[in-house]
Length: 290
Image 1 (spheres, rainbow, N blue to C red):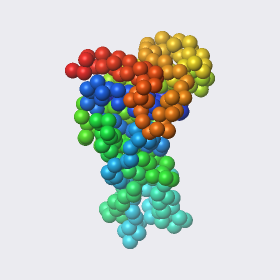
Image 2 (image 1 turned 30 degrees about the vertical axis):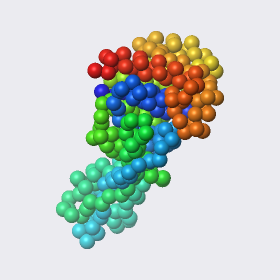
Image 3 (image 1 turned 60 degrees about the vertical axis):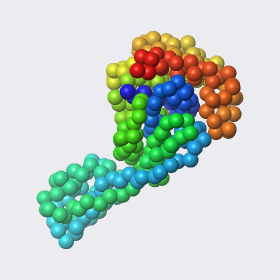
Image 4 (image 1 turned 90 degrees about the horizontal axis):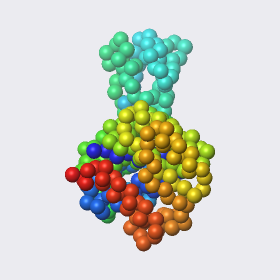
């Protein structure tokens, strides 16, 4: 079983919903492993008030040229769709590492065995953190300056699946690009967090389209529901066969919980009831947790 929380537009409160829902589900007796797959800006550990745990590098293939064997045929540069390999006037290949996607096409087409050798570089890290809330947090964090986050999303999700106990609970990056699609892939439920602003509504439609394309049940949570045209969100949800399951009004208490480093669902603030109610609805979706 996998549940994904996404949001289209950034800043809608996706991570707030994800961590509070995960804590609430755990308190209801649901075993889960939490994966923060927003690898360019992972912050779930901050909202949970924990330090990142054990670190493991994520490596990506890049070619290493043996110029004593290279025939300067230029085939490696011709096949490189990322234009990471350029050639000098005489055909000598030269690699620009930050553009390399690690696809190995150059290695495959090279006609001379051993002219292209294996080399690797660190593109980021995964972290495994045992939280005080009863579940493990797996975090992917892209190395500064790296442009390709997909390999790290794949690595972090694989790590979470290896450690998975109960439900795999996934928090994705913003947007609807390929990294988000990979993060939500194989989910049994997609929870889209939005806000009733023009940009929020626009991106809500994109994430609902993604849910339809991937043929998964989709719920909608409206954050800051008292600051815009939430009726339009309901219209979109109806259009795509989704269900609006919760409304969260603008709340200084939630901001205060950020500062305290404590999930709001564990406080006495009134907003805690919203997340507890959402967790019970998820429990019903799971069939009572059986």
